[in-house]
Image 1 (cartoon, rainbow, N blue to C red):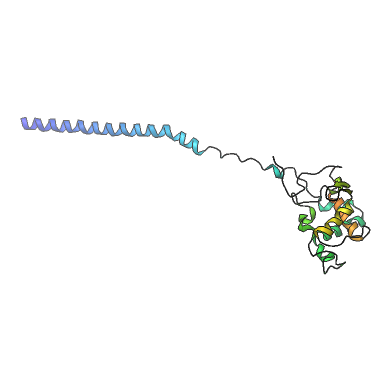
Image 2 (tube, rainbow, N blue to C red; image 1 turned 60 degrees about the vertical axis):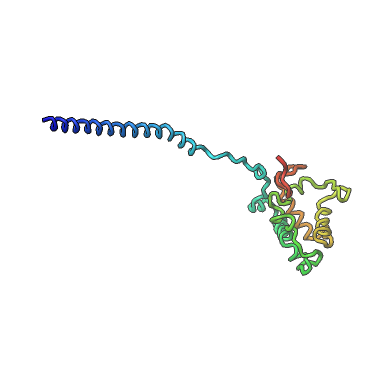
Length: 202
């Protein structure tokens, strides 16, 4: 009887220990889960933070752009022909006025758009946007007031290492007509943003 009673007591003790162990496991799990639930939002919040803002490059905001092609229709038929011919002369100078030029050999084989990018229409590409609005003007190089004819021929003689164009020639009139058309919307004495190669300091 005593042995049986001890056996029953042992079983009861083991039962109590088992229940206690289960409760301990449950309590540990609840504590672990509570800790993770409180820390997860912080981690999520950190992950969902917006990336740092990159300042906008203001060098490419509100730049001058060349007139659209359809605006050629506002010119007379003769002016349209001259303007288109002028654009070809700027883009492919060597074909017309280079050493083997179809018009006359008066330059070194370079094209005007080697310096005045995209036939003088590229923002920050030494474009022609301000020529019509600012010439005639004083130039330090010559120490005199120059008109557009003098400026164009200065390029032919210096940059293209060639000879000047006749001021009354079709080629000169074409270049000037094209330059005038490019500056259609530029107010007098105004230098549009993005005219030259270098960018302004902020």
